[in-house]
Image (cartoon, rainbow, N blue to C red; front, top):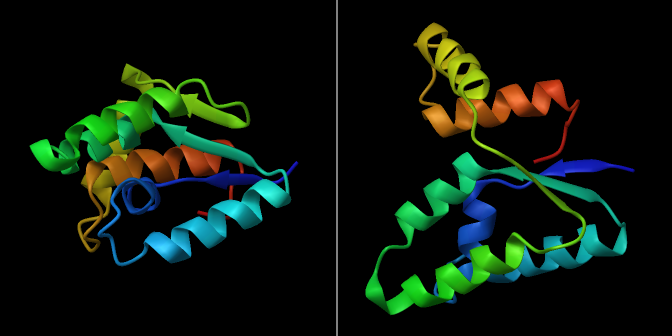
Length: 119
C-alpha cells in the first residue's frame, strides 16, 4: 500500500472554506481515497493545525475535524514523543540553510523512517 504524508497545509485547506487550496485539497483527497493510500500524519502536525486555526469563527469546526481524524480508518497519526522531537531538532539545528520549521523537520524524519516519498 502506498504511503502518503499529510502535512499542515493540506489539513488547513480541508478545514477552512476560505482557503485558496480548498478545491485542490478536495481533489487530492478524493484521488488518494480512490487509490486506497495509507495516510500518515502526526500529532505535531495536528498541533500546528489547531494553532493556526484559533479564530473563534473556525475553532469549533477545527475541533470537530481533528476529532474526526482521530477516528478515521486509513489514517495513521504518529504520536508525540521525545525521540521524534530530538531527531527533528537535530535536523532543524543542522540545516541552517533552510527555512524549515521544527514541525517540518519532524515530518521529514518520519517520512524517512516510513520511506514516504509523497507529501
